[in-house]
Length: 292
Image 1 (cartoon, rainbow, N blue to C red):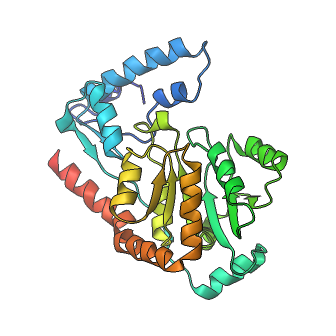
Image 2 (image 1 turned 90 degrees about the horizontal axis):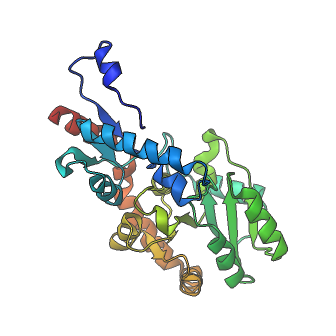
Image 3 (image 1 turned 60 degrees about the vertical axis):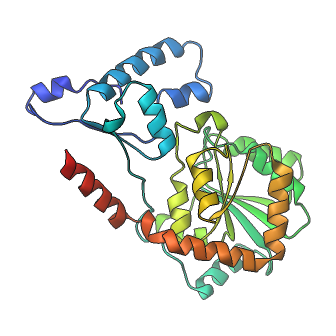
């Protein structure tokens, strides 16, 4: 992003149409998470060049309506902005009860424990300190938090959990791709988090893998975001603002005591699972590309 592709076109692709497929929106993400004062002038130039190439492109593809709104504010005509969601990694699907039980036993998870899992990058765009607050709020209630993965906040979170003596939170390394479905299935409920100032800059794609293995979501982030609206409108879990830890804790207690509620959410997830697959995304891409 940020490179003017005019030279590439002149070199042999004359007449080609440039489509920007936008994932996380930089440099705004860097600015949101605290880019240094020295870097800001460079990022400002990058921002102007990036907008120039967006405006000259045949289309910009984004992951969510929030991101579409942000791109439109940069001066890209709305008829050249298209939303095509990402998809779950290949091979992710619900697993057998026997395989699930075996993995829980291998990880030493006691029977009857309700597992809240965060799986993926522990990066700066994710609001994660509130996860420790949530774990503290439900400590002693047979609810285990599994943080699976690595990233910029990994060490800080581990140290903070140790200082707060949170024995209901564990950290595990990222799991191999071939066993990812089994790992994700261990979570009765999955955490997705997002900093409020990244609402229109990022759409956490871990959401699609969670849907693929048939698990509901607890979203901690801006409740006006596309992610929160999707979860609420389709009964895929629940969404709370980052600071609403007491309400999120009450939600955990409720579903821990009422597994029928979890089953209802799992059925809702199953109903949209096909929307989160590569074939569905490919169909959307074909439709878009045929139009240009």
